[in-house]
Image (cartoon, rainbow, N blue to C red; front, side, top):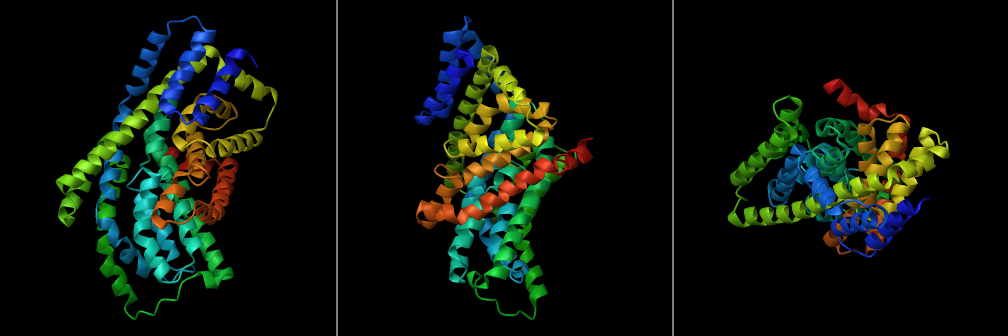
Amino acid sequence: MPASVFVPLVLLVLVLGSGVWVGLGLFGIGIVSLELFRSIPVDKLLAQAVWNGLNSPELLALPLFIMMAELLYRSRFIDGLFEALEPWLRHLPGGLLHINIVGCTLFALISGSSAATTSSVGRITINELLERGYDEKLIHGTLAGAGTLGFLIPPSIVMIIYGVLSQTSVLKLFAAGLLPGLLLAACFMGFVMIVAFLRPDKIGKIESSDENIWRTRFSRLPRLLPFLILIVSILGTMYGGLASPTEAAAVAVVATICIMAFEGSLSLASLSAAAIGTSRTVSMLGLIIAAASFLSVAMGFLGMPQAIEAHITNLELSPLTLILLLVVIYIILGSFLEGMSIIVITIPIALPLVVGAGYDPIWFGIFLILMVELAQISPPVGMNLFVLQGLTRKPLGQIVVAALPFFFIMLSFVALLAVAPGIVTWLPRVLFG
């Protein structure tokens, strides 16, 4: 391996492993590598790469979806989620544990954040389920697993970033993530049903019969109306051809503010807190995206993607073996890096390999997001693990053990998508041709 490839890789491991801010670290690696191995005006290249990376219309949706997630976290309509879903789900095998999964799925349809999904649903359901006698590990595990759906089910912040960096249609990515996200939620629910059958002692007390169960179910449905309004505002306008992702995000922010005003949770303090939270997140993501754009260009000048691609091509791996190799690499990376870093670092190298093996860039986007979801529940840096630890005040090791079955369910689901990629590409093909 030439020094122009080996040295940047070593720098990447050392710098990111040292805890330096990801954005600044990527800038530093690109600048040092180009100064060492190429005689080009790095300052001009840096300015052009940063401008091209951030000057993308699709990125306008990013702060809007983040703003909506911040507002949702401070709203009160999520509080009615448990009561609305309880009469519909309590008779299923596994009972009210399904509220964690269905609740996260519904919240994922209106929020592009995994952490926001986990924390918003968890603060409503954890105490309720514990009081009803449900197994603590299953409560935490279902939340850890289903909370990751915030990245996979549109609208997804991670999908927007992948779409911009890979020059892939964000709208098609949103469509591609919908069916796998719902299927993965169904897999989680299936696991809970199996546990309920094999270990009924882990399921809380059976709810008393309700002679007017259907009246109760329909009388509580209006509490889900805010979710329906936001889902229509986002997905309905986009797939109905009425709005782009950015326009749909703007409509959703306005709808969220209107809902908060109606329920009485809108205040100057909540708006200010949401704006500050949005500014912090967008600033962090903007720095990472700018740095990733520069590092991608630097890698191209250094010949890194071509050298690594040639090396792996010489191994003559089958497409499935290549995917297996990538899964192993991403699991290792997920144990040390957070999801956004994994995406921006690996796209320039991994995307050409996967496309060369015959997979669609849209498929690889969903595959990569699933790998990021695995990183969300992989110790020691899994964000969902820390969110749950903050909610429950339990030891991190206990949360990790609870999440482990759902980690393997997601791994099995990745294998299914590798064997049957049509699960990902079918809906975009139907909607967009």
